[in-house]
Image (cartoon, rainbow, N blue to C red; front, side, top):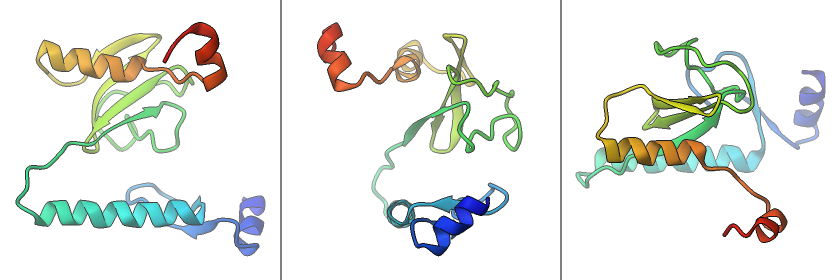
Length: 136
């Protein structure tokens, strides 16, 4: 915490409470704060418009501090291990992946379950490794 305070005093990061529902002081880079504000403005504009809403899906690693599944959210707790992931759709948990097994938290059609599973199984390969293993 002391290092974060020093970084804040140097102007490298910003301290505050950026995400509602997450307790304690939070720290973020200045460009992250700007992006969060832009996203909030876009979200508010979507809520006010009559255009059909596009759902937003986000995959979080279970070790991420924003993993509130089981603490604040009513669904089951996911072990904080680097291989576990959680898929949120519009802020609500949809599915979890633990030990390479996908568990759906809602009843979806089979094709929707397939899409969810592919999002959770998606892995990032650095460009040099992709070239080596032949993935695009």
